[in-house]
Image 1 (cartoon, rainbow, N blue to C red):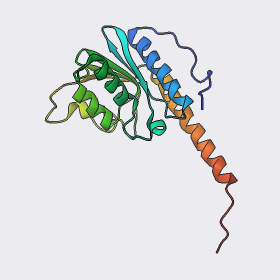
Image 2 (image 1 turned 90 degrees about the vertical axis):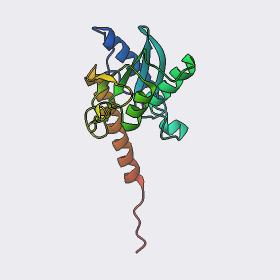
Image 3 (image 1 turned 45 degrees about the vertical axis):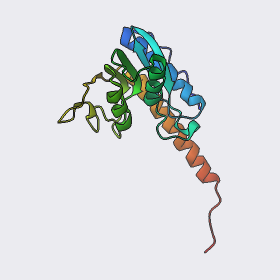
Length: 179
């Protein structure tokens, strides 16, 4: 279910944050090949993309295969350590509660996200996991809205296509007249 090129034109970065978010967008596009929700993530270390990941929940049949969790897992394996204190994360959508918790536990330094998630965003939209009242053992900084429009458009287009596909399936299904 590829997103039309006209919806997501080739962007030109204005700064380093946009450059890394564009890498996360590339990862999100990879998820579309598998009909996965288009969320992409990169973890940056020493000013370079260290690991990349995209959603694989449906493909792997596993609820925790979110882009952020997969990226954290890859980074920990690559470093041989669970502490990612010198790493920053770029993700196309505001992390959910599970991912925000994993980010704290991995001690990611800063999270940059594209689109806000009004239904399940746990950084600032629905919850504020990084800033709970009694605090955590690690403080994660964050910044949202980086290339927000292309990230949001990609999500909206994906779910629009799903609604169209589901409506077509429903229309093709014969009515049950066994009363």
